[in-house]
Every structure is written in C-alpha cells, then in structure tokens.
Length: 282
Image (cartoon, rainbow, N blue to C red; front, side):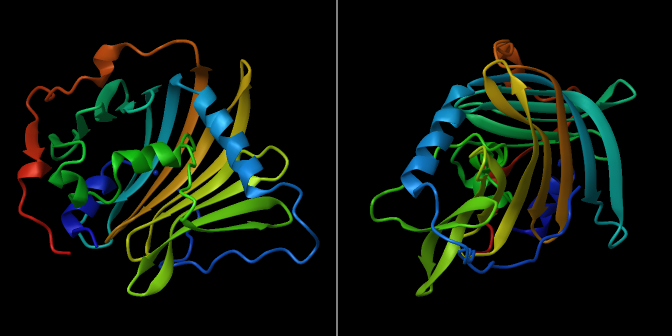
C-alpha cells in the first residue's frame, strides 16, 4: 500500500474514466465460440514490432483532470488543461499543462530522475531518482506511465506465469506472480483481435491489487504507424485520480528538444526529494 500523501501527490497530476472494480480481478474467461486464430507468440511479436516502431512523439495535449484535494474530505477538483506531450524512448517523457496561458503543472522523467510540479495552492515540485527509494513512495512508477501509453515490450521468460485467452473481440494476456502462495495478476493487456493494438492495460501491485487502468480509446494513422490519440486512465491509491488525454498535431519524426527533459526547480517552487523521506510502511 502506498501512503495517503503520495496518493494525494498523484492526485494533483493526472484525469476521467469509468470506474472499474477494486482489488484483484478474476482471470479472463476464454470464449466458448471456438479456437483462437493467433497464438500468443504471434500476438506478442506483432505488438512488440508496433511498439518498437514508435520512438518519438511530439504532440499537443488536451488534459482533463479529476483529482481529490484532501480538504475538505471527499472534495475533488476538475480541470481542463492545454499543453504538450513529448516522448523520446526509452526513458524520456514530459507532459505539461496550462490554464489561460499560465503553466500549472509539469511532469517529466529522464534516465536519472522523475519529477512532478504542481503550481496551484502548493507550488511544489516532488522528485526522486530513477530506481531510488522515493520511487516506492509513489502510486505508480515512471515505467508504469509508459506502459499506460501502450508503448511497452512484452518479453516473457519461458518460466513466467501467464495466461493467454481468446475472447470474441479481444486477445487477453494476463501476466501473474505468486503472492502468499497464490497466483495474482501483475499486468493484464487486452488486444483488439482485428488490429492487434492494445486497447486496455491493467497494472497491479505485488499483492494483486489494481493500481492503474488505462483504456486506449482511439487510434489514428500517423505516417506508417497507428498512434493512440485518446486515453482514459484511472489511478488507484488511497484516493482515485482520473485522467483523459487527447493528443493532436502528432508527429513521430519531430524529435523533442532534449532540454525539455532536463530537471529544473521552477522559480519560487518548493522542492521535496522523496528519496530523503522516511521509509514508508509496507
């Protein structure tokens, strides 16, 4: 379980979706209508080829946020932001948003650091080193955010615990782990049977509790590649944070300026290094 404080931090970042069930989800049931057309190896190979084909994204981003304020209890804020999303794989991501031309948040990562800046009310930037102790204090990791975009590889160890089933409209891959003697999910991906593109990704913590649900709602053709341009994401911690992300003016050839991925403390902002925070409870 992550702390209420870190859930509140995430609550100040990301946006709106339909509410899935909490806790571990039952493994998907195979459809009774006949044999699958493709095997898991074929589906994963097709997915990896598509994901590997997209190395850079430069896009305008419209972000709709719904997050808890924590005071008073059950109070929430909804916001519509305009900004950009920049991606330079494998490990550079930057998103920012403005209201009436004034920047109110930014989130970024590079090979060394992850950061999140919120201006309204707090003007605070939270940061930690990649793979450092601060990463365990956040609801999701930077790699989880890339997974939510659908741009991840699936390279299963031969001994990995996994279930692959064919449903009427989807292939579903459930990767699992063992916790307290039970098999619990760690990642579950729904692929459209016609396009083999991911249309939903669920991530779970080490106990099998869902921490993220991402729906990839629309794909558009950009050059020779299919690009998801509409996302609906829900993050789970002690509170729920909802996000809708719409991309436009997408370019896969326009490499983002490397300077946008450099970490800087915004003027006047308070810096909180989560690597230096007390160790969280398990």
